[in-house]
Length: 104
Image 1 (cartoon, rainbow, N blue to C red):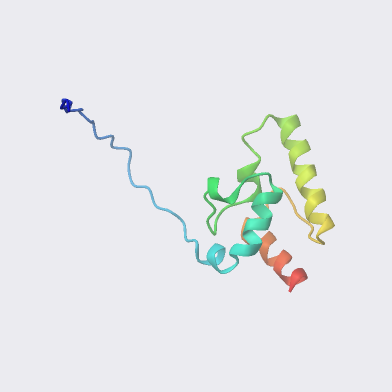
Image 2: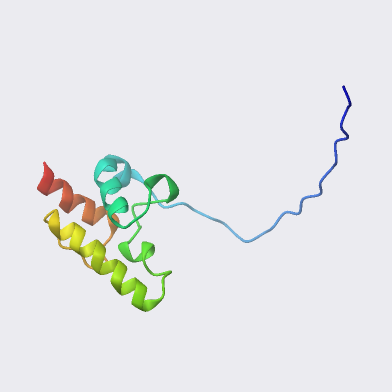
């Protein structure tokens, strides 16, 4: 069996300041409902980071304005069918709380 050479890679440290992750206490308490909200936005929960400070707009704003409006309206209609009114600047936790109140 042939031995392969190990190559050393040089890494540079990038100093960009301090990163602090917002709390996820509320998200964890309402995990089931947060999951429904995120899936209604069109994302698999496993691919997104949701914190207590996440907003609906965080998941829509990277799109072009016309696409953003269409995607938000699709989301709004899905949530309305579940009995939850939503606004563009609502927090994910607040929407999940409203959903939880309706479903429980």
